[in-house]
Image 1 (tube, rainbow, N blue to C red):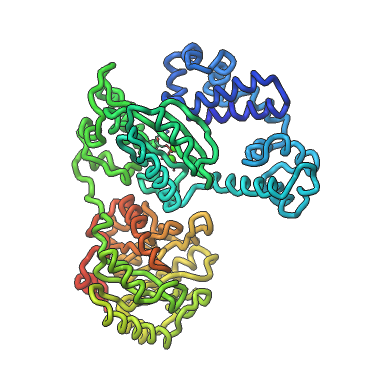
Image 2: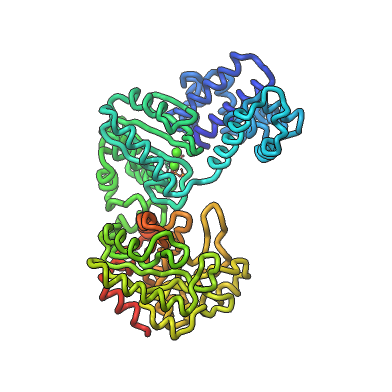
Length: 574
Ligand code: DGT
Ligand code: CA
Ligand code: CA
């Protein structure tokens, strides 16, 4: 169990005792313990394993009672006093009192009056106007409670990659202004480019950790401080996201960056490799006995184990250690390899910008080409184009291409795959397009075998070039539709179909694991933004991260090709 989880038990116990109006010193002792555990540098279970109860009691702020509870948790998997307290209150009650802006007194009152025991029930009461009737409940307090409930909702889920990236950048930019900050690096799942982010982890090199901690805790984006220690702090940001900060000395940068980047399983493997050599790896360095033998840079860390440098995106236990030992890691595709974007919408359908505006923005990004790929007739909500309108759009794209120098425009469409697997434009129109994207935009609830057959049929159309967002998922909004991706990949292989990695942070579809599978099958991929406005063209980097997590190299990604080579590939089967 992680230190934070131990800390949570003691936070909860303190809250329960407060509700019971127990002894204030006892409550404070639990809170103090929780805070100490939350910002402890060493693993609590390690401390217990090597020092027992005595070892635990040596931690400042941890007395005998608390040490015993930690031991009980480690030995039995629960703390009986905690369970007993929890039974005295309605289930989920702590979830209510932890709503920012509410507090235990109001929570008790709401429970007594309305039997409200979940944030959802309180939200309903607040919205129905029933809370206003209670004493001391003004409009402002109610607005605060609703805001708190929203924050809580947000913090329970995982966050989208672009949202987390923006918040991490905000923190980095502010902390960087401190002269005490020598180096700063966002780590964790964010650095590994994972599709969703649980919390932000930031590593700082400084000889004056206190200054960094103070600045971090008082950043304008901070809503609550969970823990503030000498070298380790955790806060909740106003959007509900948690951010952890660690400060280490310069010589520990490599091992600390490696540790906080994870993944956990990857870290455990490094530790096991160290044990085999009779060394120990921690955030602070590689040690032989008490002697520091390395850890200044990640390159040095990997080299110590005879390994090639493993890029963060590959640290997921998908064979990276074996490949690194043989010095056979792939040279991963980079954002700067991308020569064009093959999927975007304009004002012809549901995009916000014109063909010209999209082209000029893409040119600014340094692209050699783009494809304009508006929706077709069946996607009515997006104002999809029928055959005649598609022809008009082709002409408009060609006219725009003549006007704009320095970037090439492909006339394309994102053509709907109908429930029976037919495309919703006739072949006579499809063959006039430079590039045909095919996609499912309707009837998401089909049974798996029917959906699979539907898409496979579409892939057999000889004009189809790219299958876009192959599972249709919208992260945190819509589950992927049921489909046999392995069968789809096989069909793509047979029909020379390129599979899209949709770079939109809500999609990131194809996923990393299937990118790796597609690569193994020799299938080419395209990383596209599906931009509906000029600024969304910038989402490309998230697609590249997913591709990298799927071990993809430049040669696996078709939009790294110069246009002539790309067109040759697209037209090979026509
Ligand atoms: P997240 O936040 O859920 O998206 O995922 P991560 O990977 O950012 O995980 P997080 O924030 O809990 O921890 C950051 C890194 O710290 C993690 O990737 C590896 C390291 N780490 C955390 N807890 C442990 C642990 O119990 N054992 C080991 N070996 N490493 C850990
Ligand atoms: Ca994290
Ligand atoms: Ca974390």
